[in-house]
Length: 145
Image 1 (cartoon, rainbow, N blue to C red):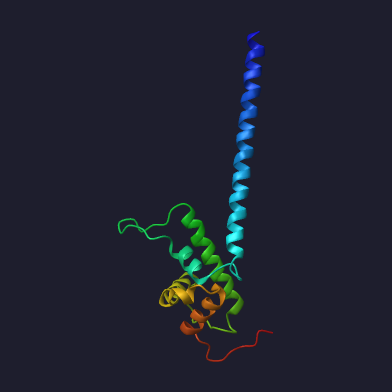
Image 2 (image 1 turned 90 degrees about the vertical axis):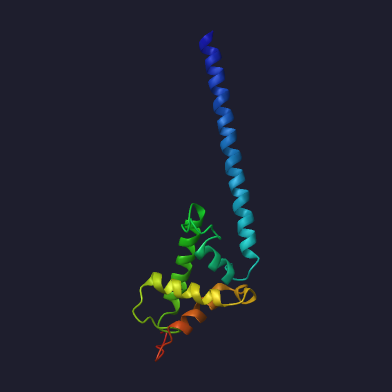
């Protein structure tokens, strides 16, 4: 008799855990859907302000300058975005003078900081290209073909 009650308790416990897992999955799906909807409200999906915020991270107290948790993921995504724009436009809209990628990303962030908040509300890709053209102009532009 004790075995049957243990089995019944074990089975109901598994059902409760399974239900909890499904609720977590549903919650994550709703969270993703709202994040996607927020992204779709801008034409390109990424604004200059959003890119700069993701790259630099949120404001932190002076004694803790390090990114943590989700901020690290956002920073890496912003770096990837910048790298994609750099790769797509290098040699046709700007020319690298030998600087390494992370230094160029810092230059982009510096130029984005110089823009007004209203200017940073626009799509990020043209702002990144504008920053690259300002910092690294080409003496002669190659064809993209």
